[in-house]
Length: 439
Image 1 (tube, rainbow, N blue to C red):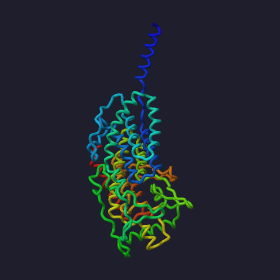
Image 2 (cartoon, rainbow, N blue to C red):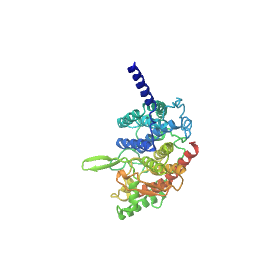
Image 3 (cartoon, rainbow, N blue to C red):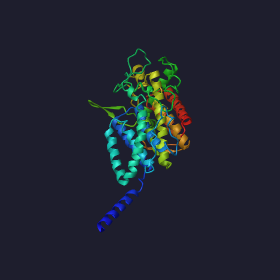
Image 4 (spheres, rainbow, N blue to C red):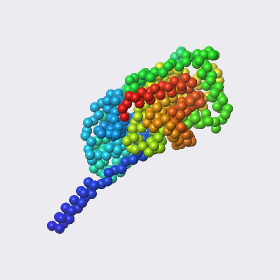
């Protein structure tokens, strides 16, 4: 009888303690850790800038929806983003932890958008084990809710035409048109993502909604607007070269390079130098801004989500124009007509020139971040430290966007029109997203 009483008491105490475990504490830094891990895997897998933008957006949207599908701090994106509807109506279990569920949903979508799924899975499983040990009841309820939401997001994602574009024809580089883009050294890669305009935008009505004005008409005749821009670029870059590698222009160009396709030749070997993309740089600025402002978990997810949506739509809009105008790069023309020994400070990326992707993406990102944090949000940009580049300081997000845009001219890879019109294109996209989405 005494044994039975002790056994019952043991069961009671065990049940009591199990049911009264502390809630799993989640902080904004936990979310930064998710994003940083995804960036790490993306660098390893070497994704193009447009594809990388898509990879950031969907996990952020999944996490955001977990927090805001039901009684959230912000508005649900259901029926706001193109074709996003019928999100799982699973009721939120009071035993679940929404912030924990947001991390789980993020990881569930993240592993489906990269090549190295096992890297995300191993990372996820280690976290799962930790959370399960801390509070199995809360973890199980949170996971159930998270996976129901992420399942709906993945179904919506798979209908955005990405899979279909994987099998569409490659870009035809053969043409008698002297203005048409041609592959550039050292790898002479084909134009990447020529069908990216067919990807479903998140907020834009179509890829062509913010079609920029055309570039100056191609002409190698002296005095024409196009030839003048070409010669201005050639003369400016020569002046920068004379200043040496310690010049401010070189520092700016290198800081904003963000080219994941840089090819390095060492003897008989050719390999890629892995870097982040321009979109990833602005995702890094999201981290800096949320940490500086002491943003809570919900606001941190909101900032990443809104910015990644803007970045993705900016790439869709920019790539729509790139393969419409198919404009030749400065390097090709300068080597052929002006100076065969000239080469740009930065390696020319493998796609047409107009408009400048950095300019479009930076313009859109800066408008969104300015809308959230204000126009005079000064910050130290440490994003490039892991890649051997020092910190640069900015008085505002727009200040950073302007520098990102001009960096492409200093680098010798864009004409002035691509930068100026690209920045305007991005600003228009950013403002459209700000006005159309209700957060």
